[in-house]
Image (cartoon, rainbow, N blue to C red; front, top):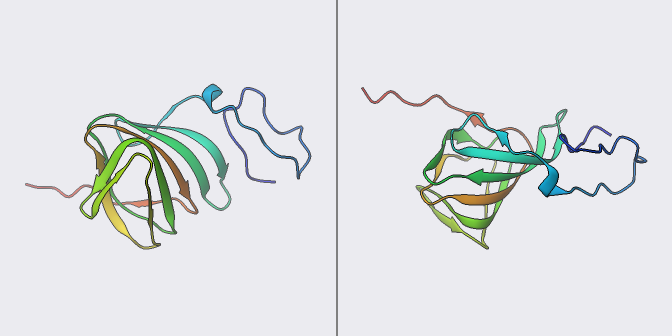
Length: 130
């Protein structure tokens, strides 16, 4: 099986192929992301396909630059809110974006987001405003 939960204090490697994988999320470390003010805990990843389930912490003022969702992206907002030019998704609500959709997202007051990706996003360089 190529799907794993990295950073576990006691890895699942010794489990049989069809055994359930229970994850103590609290014990996972926060990882920095390329976007300042956004950190993540990887709950499940399959590097060969790009599948990723992660918990994202957006500090107040965090911005995720211009990017395209190569496949469907799903986000459930646990705390706070994230927004883009199409609208705002608040705590207890869910937003999904079709493959090929493109946007930049922000969280003026911060958020905790559970997100599901079938493939990595494609990021675009910031446009020079000079």
